[in-house]
Length: 317
Image (cartoon, rainbow, N blue to C red; front, side, top):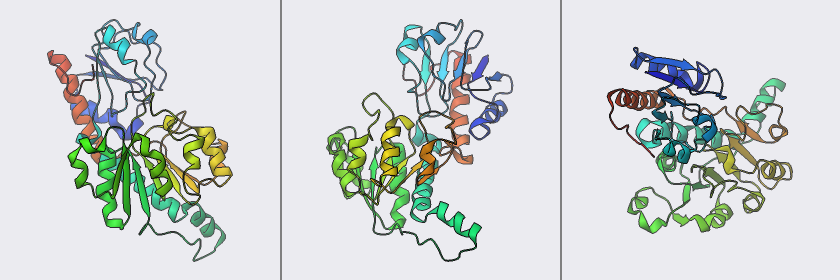
């Protein structure tokens, strides 16, 4: 059984080393980058951030499974995989500890922006004490866009901060009785996004990237946010129009942004966006000891299932 990991050896918190420990008899190869040119000779592909196109899939001669090491499959041509009889599976965020880890990082970005982490670093360097003055989370309104695994984990962790929580979800909120357990003051549908933006001091994006959500936060959406509000994106870079965000930050339309995901990854550290009030992390929201263990467990199980001719878990096709 030959498995290709489409990233460098140590990417994602040592995920590949965990798989090797679980599956010592499986041949695991790291591509060294997100760019893959051939799938010939591989039974399983772990795509990470790579684009898996129809043309690339046509180079496969024995591929049985595309197994993502997380939930996101927006880079995989699922229709092409289905046409070639290749199964595609992911690891849902709420079964692996991933959602909990991402929610924690979202709060880290919220606090870092509120307390002006960049300004604190400048004060220490200059020997200034007692500044900058920060903003407390208590009493603020957090708008959560997307109430799946990550959004739900975020609501649980925010309860201790004495914040008001509101949210929107893609489907009719009245169809999910579980929403009443989340402690949200108000839940709207997709068409209610502007109302959430009008009311929120923090807007947290925790929904999948799809054709419908691409550039959800564009110039018009950002203009609906409060001028002292912060945008937090821990989902996918494509949810936000990069140029619109830069303009909003430069012109004071919003106060700042916390970004764990980007339009091109890795992002260019010289990007003009970073001249503004942006607190950035290198797509590490789901990279913790807990979530990596949980993801390794599911991925290893699915590779074993493929070896045994058993249907993998969490298949999307």
